Amino acid sequence: MMNKRSILKVVAVSAAAAFAFGALTACSSGGGSTPDKKVTLTFWQNSTTGPGVEFWKTTVANFEKANKNITINMQSIQNEDLDGKLQTALNSGSAPDIFLQRGGGKMAAMVKAGQLMDLTGLITAKTKAAVGAGAFAADQYNGKSYAMPVDVLPEGIYYSKDMFKAAGISDTPTTMNELNSDIAKLKASGVAAVAVGAKDAWPAAHWYYNFALRECSESVLNEAAKTLKFTDGCWLKAGKDVDTFNKSQPFNDGFLTTAAQQGAGSSAGLVANHKAAMELMGAWDPGVVASLTPDQKPLPDLGWFPFPSVSGGKGDPAAMMGGVDGYSCSAQAPKAACAAFMNYIVTTPVQEAYYKAFDAPPVNTAAQSVVTEDILKSVLAAYKKAPYVSQYLDTNYGQNVGNALNSGVVNILAGKGTPADVLTDVSSAAAKG
Image 1 (cartoon, rainbow, N blue to C red):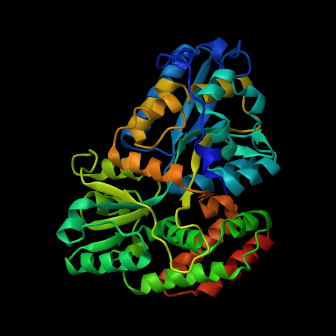
Image 2: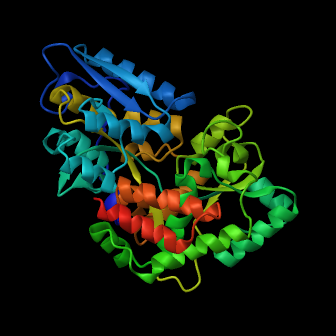
């Protein structure tokens, strides 16, 4: 669990921090200087197509121009495949030097296994001023930094304004009763109300996460992160909420075999092509949707609203689910070279380019000023008002518990499991460590 202010609070960047894109020099890198001898780094990231992968290609090329002794071999890995491949590589001692970091319990497990480089003393003063101590807190363990944050990713429901209007819906829902009513109207208009990529498990499980956020108090969520015990009744209520919601048939046909982000038939693709009206997803969604529209441009009528309140829930109705993407260095990576790249990716020009490529709010304060889309402004406004923000549960509670939770929710949706089964499976996974 991360307090909202510990994620988003940042310090204003001075004019001296406004580097030209690609102009980070050896003397401005972390660790004091870049290597005297030639070094090659391996780099895994999860953008495989469109502006995202082009951003990373350009960023790597510009960094290499400014740091002649460093070569970066980048590998693009599909998001849904990354965690498994990374865990295998870490366990076998063949991890990439730099890789995407989810944070939470997953990161903590890597730290405990001695698999991550401690970046605390390698973060430059300019980087600290650009990002601020609060944003770093999301990627810290026991007060030490093990990843460089690059964006903030609060979650909510993305929707088609045109499809809402065609179904006679004038306002976005604020309660589950209102959402259920809107779903009925959308279905009556002949469209799929909610898209979900249950084939990939985690998108379906995000419905459970958000129901738990509404049913459970902040203290219960925090305690579960420490103990991995799910005995409070709110966890079962969240599962029952998922089961009840699923029985109203809100999702697209074939949702159990629908992917999340790959192709026009994915859940994001259904929204992008006006085949479904809504999708519950993090703040990366506008960029994914844009890559799947017919012209590969942002969907003009895409809107956003927070997850609705649940009657009788003990969670604050304004609380949000969210995360912070970051990048880690493996424990055995070349220290100076890795530190130089970590500091480079949060410079103002790079962060502005990151936002333009991914349509995701950057962590750099100066770069946040270029966020112009109303949809992301509304996301950030709700984020700033949230009393607390929970990390995605499969990240917060670690890979074993997360995998059990995700698959258990899919079993509920498939009619192969019950809310009680989810808690049994999660408790068993927690006991295995």
